Image 1 (cartoon, one colour):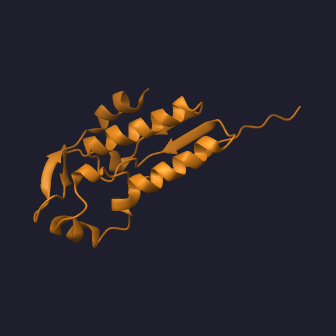
Image 2: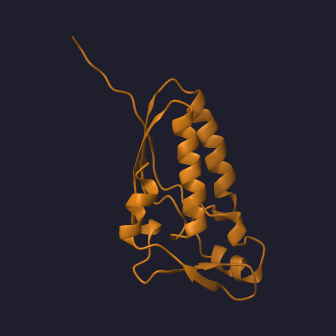
Length: 132
């Protein structure tokens, strides 16, 4: 008897909380060098997750880089989006990666003319955030 397993695999969401700024001189300077759709990441992820919820596949694997650069608020929002997938009946497995933490515990927000340092999690802090 042939057994199969279905999975939807997602990677590199680079979710960025809009609360950290997307309409300032410092953001525009940051975004000029970015290869990510940071300002629209939340909208893109939400639309994608709605399609995934409608798909019959029950197993979702997320392979890291959930946040832009490890912002706590971006993590909170992304974990809530993953929880919403779980609540829709999906089995969600999450792996974190290098954009999800900062060894020096610092990342940035972009709400003024100059980027502002804000706290970021270390690698060790990620497991409790994503374990559920």
